[in-house]
Length: 73
View 1 (cartoon, rainbow, N blue to C red):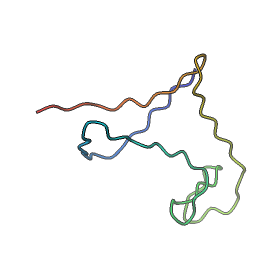
View 2 (view 1 turned 180 degrees about the horizontal axis):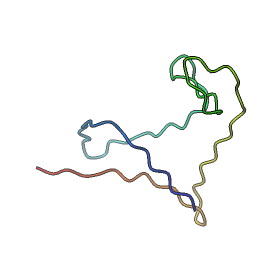
View 3 (view 1 turned 60 degrees about the vertical axis):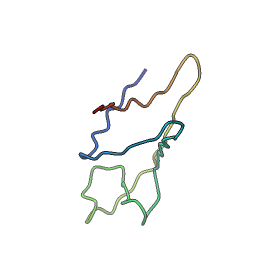
View 4 (view 1 turned 180 degrees about the vertical axis):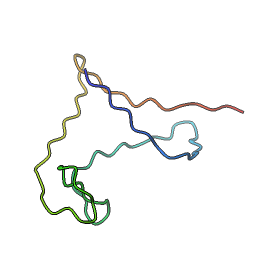
């Protein structure tokens, strides 16, 4: 099992009962999303690129979850 922590900027959304949240995992959506070269080079000046592979498992043996904080009040 691999746990990935994604630090998000402070933001608040109110979801009504029955609404859904979509999680999008992207390795390439340039120019909509800044490109990730996969090499650690600076985004603005890097030139070398490597192929990336994303796997998201969602079966009984390897379940996936998105845990969001709940603020009441």
